[in-house]
Length: 461
Image (cartoon, rainbow, N blue to C red; front, side, top):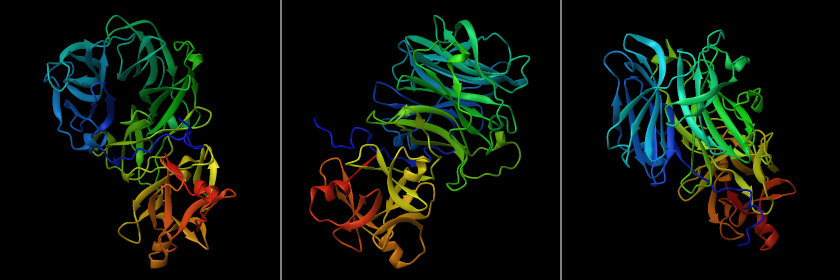
């Protein structure tokens, strides 16, 4: 099959409506070979582990929820049931979670449940006990991954002699998925300003493997609006148990965004889209900044999902936590591989490797001028829309006028260049389409040439 010029770079658009679940923090979504997504998360009562499943990500929002385990009334696993993760290992289901004691709620340790049923919402869960690490100290957020044929356990823990709340650690797993073996490697200690606001924290690790590298995200700082996501990167061929194999990004890769009203994004996991072609970032945040009292007692962290984009150098770009509602897409040029429509000083132009990513993200929403039309709302400037003015295309704030609404409304058409593309025809200039020319974007009349039709066709990514 011969791909159109821009198709090799772009992966198909995926769109979800956020939030996926209210009052569900530390979300973990696992896509299994049975065609279901399995979703678990921390509940605000911190007293139980819940699980739901659906054949689509969006379906998780309305899927029935099952309580698969409740805290003990005395002793271990009796309080602060946090951050469950569900994994399928060697033909069985496992849930990793953190818990305190009923008589010492801050004695947080890591525990494992096991279920041999094909459907983990059924069958019985067996307690496999505590994950033993070199120190009997505050530890949480266990996760597991396989790289180079080796299964690893990755977690957060407070290490004696280091004045932090938690650091990240890595070890090989032993004969069963609740035992580690061999040396334990300290991967990172929170020392940077954005890792130490409120508390000195590195927690909630998650792994994404692609392009010959292993990308390890983690969450840092207090769990209020300071909470954010950092990144460690290693070569897939490196010795992962050598701390020197990992490079820390010096700035957070995902953080609060006042423009989109998203605060404290973090404790993420990764899954894949239904078509298997897009990596998805799963995380929690709040839609307000200010919290009364201890953030731990605020129940309103919500589960959200959005697409991970990939730069031409093979590294992930998480962008910003997008606004509630439908997730945005990018308009990739059909005839210029890797080039996207973006705004720069509010003028629309075409560019590759857009930084910041959100400049090239638009939400396709109901058209401002009414039924049968669509409008393209800026992801990082909510309330600003792609509109034409003197046939130039700009991103401007809606002013409430009928003229603006018409200028910012389009009819979504099958792409002029053919299958797999989309074109946007102006509402108030029929026969005129969004197209790029000489590096900028215009609304111009279709002249019937293949050059015009290619430049007026886009691949939604």
